[in-house]
Length: 110
Length: 120
Image 1 (spheres, rainbow over the protein chains, first blue to last red):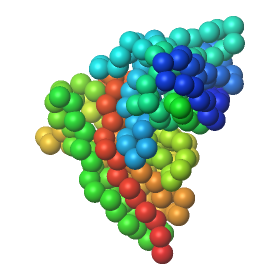
Image 2: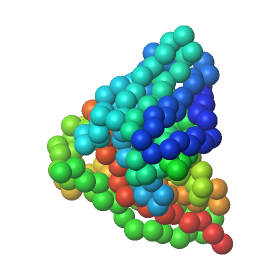
Image 3: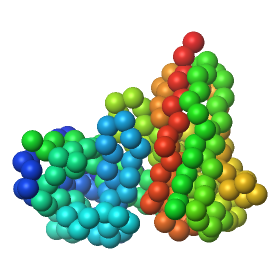
Image 4: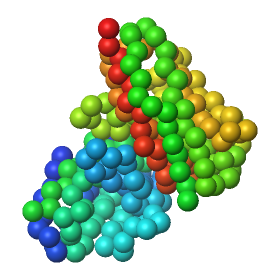
C-alpha cells in the first residue's frame, strides 16, 4: 500500500494564491487519478477536483488541480483566496484494492 | 439534484452491530457505485469499502474485512453498511459517497454523515 502525504496546515491572506501538495510514497502519481475534497468544520466533505484536474460541479475556476511526475505529487491551487475557502482539504487516490486519503491540510485564510 | 440521505446517529455497546443506511435520489441508482468512508473524532478520512449498485460486487478495506457487510436495495435506492463486533475505535462519523461511475473508487456526492458512538 502507498501513502499520500500532505502538509498539516497552510495559511495565506485573502486575495492571494495558495498551493497544497500531496506526495505519493510509492508507485507513480500518474498511475491512478487524484481527487481533492473540501471539508468545512461540522460539515461533510464535498468534491472539489476529480481525475487530477477536473473541477466538480459548481466549483469556481479559482480552484485547480495538477500532478507532477517529477516529484510524484499532486497539487491543489486556490487563487483569489476568500475567507469561505478556510477548510480542511484531503487528497485521495487508489489502486486495485484500496483507496487512500492524505492526512488532510488545514487551510487558514487570514 | 443528487442527494444521499443517511440514517440518524446511533449509540452501541462494544461487541454489538450497527447498520447505517443511505437513501439516494436524483440519479439512476443502479448506474453508480456507493463507497463508505468514516472519520473518527478530530481525525482524517478512512475508506471502508465500495459496492456496485448494478451487480452487488464489493471491495472492502483490509482493516474491516470480516466485520463489514455492504448491501444495496435497488427497489428503494438505498445502500446499507453493517459493521459488527464494534470496538471503541469504531466511534466515528460514517459517510456514504456516490462514485463517479459504477466501479469508481472516487466520489462526487457525499451523504450528511451518521455519527456512531461505541461506548459501554
